[in-house]
Image (tube, rainbow, N blue to C red; front, side, top):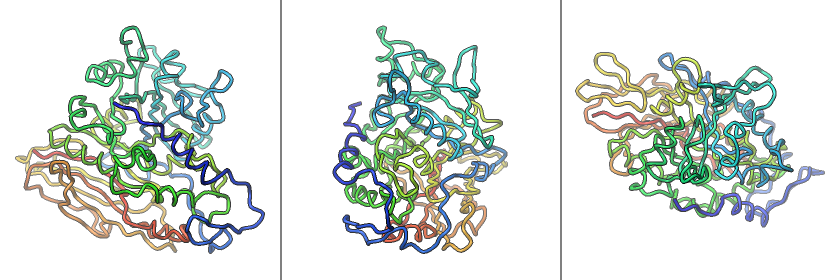
Length: 487
């Protein structure tokens, strides 16, 4: 795959022209020279703090006895050359402040498992164990006498499972070892971009995903037959060299201007809602996803955080840099339905089977979402599964409620939509307004096809936190469910 110029380089050059790291304001005034309404923190009516930490994923529910686990797929730490403001290593060792920011983010966002995806340069230079950067108190995960991951523990007892992987032309996640070298070169093995490379990563214990699907043709994806594809990547919203491919109708320039209004200690805008300034669906990725499922390939989709801490270093009004690992993980994650306890095997099995959904938690944590099929004889088929039309199945849907909604806040407007894949499009089949009030919804299936559910939201409860930028309160996805096949 052709590699495009780095997102970090493009964004940093833009920021250098538009802003600088702020110093604490001596008063509450601010001048808005970007076309927005003049406002400051002092001008904002009293309001409850927007939560900067997430509740345990367990509040989202335990459908059919499975546990919901919050999982980050695609993230870069001190073993990627472009992480940590381009300084992942300092004086011959890892950039410890950047690594500690990463580790703190796991606790504050209550991440249950993170799949590291480091670039080949640093990853291929040393031992597999070196990639993981264990610290005192970490708990190694061993398989067949080899280190394959580790647990970190937070002060409140929360634990996160860290699993190593790489992102180059392909994105193997959950590697158990380095792949076999190609022509004597480990770097060449990590840069593989063919079906043989997929097989080589499988042999090394990984699931293989394709990142940045907007840069791929459907022919390439069909030939690769990966285990997972990205259906959303945050960089595809902001990098000018990618955004037009991901969504040709998105206004990338306006998104960046809107994002810059969140910058600075005196901004009245809630910085964790900056996601609404730049978010646009990756329509090209969603189209590829539909085509793959229509080809008969059950291809689970994931959302990619692609965090580096290398882009928006300026501080926002919470004293935290704009692109902190904590903030990026607060925006969205993959809610994975795990059978039994959380282990390397159980979380990888759930992702591989498609028992997961994307939750855009920048809008709030969804509580109680469920989507599955039920045959006439009572058998249950989870997301990612195939059920026969001859089994007289029904689709069973339940919309979520907003976890810990403020009692005095305007409630969000929520819609649940059932889609069917037709060629490269997801075509709406049925829509429910205020669906949480309906409880469980059952839809008999009368035609074979691929079906998936979205829950969408107009986040009215966020309006008070966006003074002067109320246009950002618009219809956006809250949940992307993985599809089910009826054949």
